[in-house]
Image (cartoon, rainbow, N blue to C red):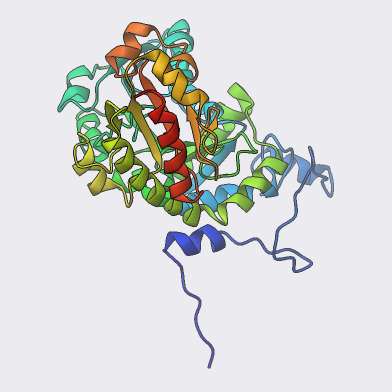
Length: 398
C-alpha cells in the first residue's frame, strides 16, 4: 500500500514547493535556460509551434522554461490560473493597461500610488487618448460615482505607496461591477501574496513589482501579472510580446525563483519587526504622525484586518518640516538611505523628493504626500537595532 500526494495550501510550504521542476539529471534546483532561441526538429514543427498547433518553446521573448517555472510558482501563490513575468514592475503595469485600453477609454485610479505609475497614467495614457481620473477610493461610493460608459479599468494599490492608505478590495470590486466590461487591477506589491490574495476577493488582475518582496534580495528588477488564463494569454501576446517587449531575462527569473524559497519567512519576519517599529515611532516626540495599518488609529486598520494576514512592513511617518526630515534621513546607519523596499535590509527615503518627485506638488499634498513624510521599509534585522538607529536619528531633531 502506498501513500497519496497532498496538495499544499500553506504559504510557507508553497513558497518552497509550488510548481516543482523536474530536471532530466535529477537536480533539485532547476537549471537556467540562458538562450534566446530554441531548435526545431524540422520545419513542420517550427510552423506548428508558431501557428499554435503544438506546444513548445520558440524564442525567449515568447516563452522560456526558466521564466515558465517562475510564472507557475507565482500563479500558485496568488491563487491565479496563470502569470506573466516582465522585465520590471512598470513593465507589468504597462503591459496590463495597454493590453485592454484604447483611445477613448476611461481609467479610474486611486490618487495615492507609485510616482512612475502616476506618470504612466497622467502622461502616457492621456497622450494616446485615454481618459484618466485620479480619485480617493477610500471615500465610500467614490468609484461608482466616477464610472462612465467608457470606463474599462479601475486601478489601485493597497496598501498604497507611500502613505499606506488601505482600500477595501471587496467593496471596490462591488462598485466596479455596477457596470459591465470593467477590469479591476490591484498592485499587490506592498502586501505580497503572503499577506493578501486580491484575486480571491474578486479582482481581475494582480500586478507586482517582483523587485520587492517576491525576489527579496535587492538584486533584481522585475514584474509579474497574475490573472485568469485568457487574460494572461492576451497580456503575453499583446502587452509583452507586441507592445512593451518587457520580457524578463531567464537569469533574473531564476534568481527570483530562488528568492521565493524564503518569501514567507522574510515577509512575516519583516512584518513582525514593522509592528514594533511603528509602535515605537508612535510614541517618539519627534514624530508627528505614523501611517501603518497595524496601528489601531490608522483609518484603514479594520479593513486591513479583514483582508490582510499581517499588516506588512512598510511604514510612513511625518516629522516637523523638510529640514528635520532630511536630518533624520542623513543620520540613520543601520537603516540605509535608498529607494525601493522589500529586501532583507531596512531602507528609508523621502518620497516627495525621490520616488514621487514627478507628481505635481498640489496632487502630492492632496494625497497626503507632504515634504514632512518619510517612508520606511522595515527589514529582517534585529528589531531592537532598527529601533535604536531610528531613535538616535530622531533624537537629533527634538
